[in-house]
Image 1 (cartoon, rainbow, N blue to C red):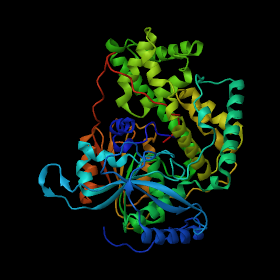
Image 2 (cartoon, rainbow, N blue to C red):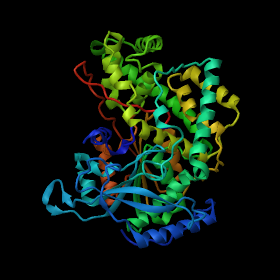
Image 3 (cartoon, rainbow, N blue to C red):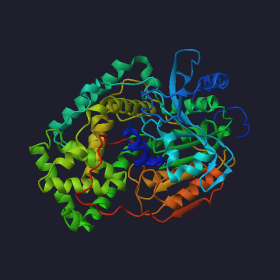
Image 4 (cartoon, one colour):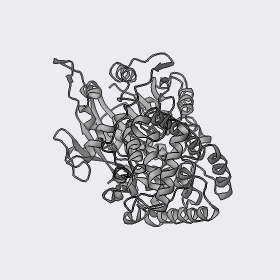
Amino acid sequence: MRAAALYSAAGTLLLTSLAAAPAGGAPAAQAAPGAPGAAELRGTEVAVARAEATGIAFGTCSPADVPHAPKNLRCGTVTVPLDYARPNGRQITLTVSRAPATQKDPHNSKRKVPRQGALVYNPGGPGGSSMYFPLVGTAPEWKRIAAAYDLVGYAPRGVGRSAPLSCEDPKHYFKAPTASPAHPSEAYKRERIAEAKAYARGCAERSGDKLRHYTSLNNARDLDVLRAALGENRLTFLGASYGTYFGALYATLFPAHVRRMVLDSAVNPDPAKIWYRNNLDQSAAFEERWADFRDWIARHDDVYRLGDTAEKVQRSYDTARERLAARAAGGKVGPGQLQNAFLRAGYYDDFWPGQAQALSAYLHGDPKPLVRLAAPDLRTAAEAENGNAVYTAVECNDAPWPTDWRVWDRDNTRLARVAPFETWDNAWMNLPCAFWPAPRQQPLDVRTGLGELPPVLILAAERDAAAPYPGALEMNRRLADSVLVTERDAGTHGIGGGANTCVNAYLDAYLLEGRVPGRRASCAPHRLPPAVGPAKKAQRGTLRSGRR
């Protein structure tokens, strides 16, 4: 399950545009009951001690890390063991970015805001980088937080220049046009099985023995080393989407090292759900969110002319798929590219107007907006291939997966009868895990008892498709002192620092003052976007389905 934009909790539109533009003391680390690996625990302690002594030498950001970085953004590296059971063995470096706390009150220029330390952010994935995150401090919704905290982003292991992973030649990553049958034939299934096997082999051939060390547990251990390198006795962390999962692992492994923690769009941490069942749940939830989008289009039939009911909108979409199967738009946009582009509708309703306009234009004789929206951008191929490799490695390594194709075929065939929009594309995304060559781990049983760590703030939208709402309820249940804030009847993936002022008030109160509501609180939904006609340019993107 891969997030459509990897900056969900930090303001998607702001960071997308930027990417396109030229503490008190804490006791020693302690293992959680049943935590895997005494050797890994000792190795983490060794790596933490080294990081405390070494720190991070921040300097000018390399264009390879953050192109056109402003002067206040500084970059550096932190060293971590590839294998925490062998902390003195092979080392890898993670790239880190930081913007210092402004200490300027945005509402009172004469008041100096006390610095509260570093706020570390992870946007999810697996495979997402937050190197751009510190730039979010210029947005109005983030200025109060940026005044009190150094905003810290980083590229997790495997991502970007942090010991990068690759599973195939990036030049071959974007294949277009492609098919996307909601009910695939047996012949098509055999093709995708062969592709999944080849992809799994490619991961092993390109990565060798290091492949097994790209896991969520190691991401949590890396986070503790980063905390120490930043000079923080306790961690203040904001994780979105998949970032909530290894944030919860961190809280379970190192509860005494948590200062404040925000888990935005929480993944279901139940070990039985990691990751095969979570992906099935996600596919079912996307069907509901796709229905929300179709309802919205139908309400604006005077603008888009795609049908005045959700059923008629679906027929318009199906007509587009059939036409694209017969003749790709611009030679590159087939049904697969259409599906990939419209998957973003399930993540962010900000995209709804541009997507509806592009579909309408195509069906009424103008393919250009759809080509701009959905055609692969070859300039991003290396980054996309890298992100997909990390996603696959982490999810496949984290837990057992069914190795019998008949299980996948049975489960996805049943689900596709009631949830055809995303089910099979999500299955193909994850199918390499059926043939994975590296050893599988058993997922950690995420849970903490009363008083074991400070209150954790969980944020969730009730109709989130990428991280279905039951996952937030399960996270709330397993972290004993956590608080859940729900945006009712809304489906944006990543709600902190976004369009809902009620949610942002809870986020600010928690990060700035440590205040939380009761065990549960809720906010009314943010306003859906207005319909926009042909004058607006459609958003562009190339993202595989299935990522958190």
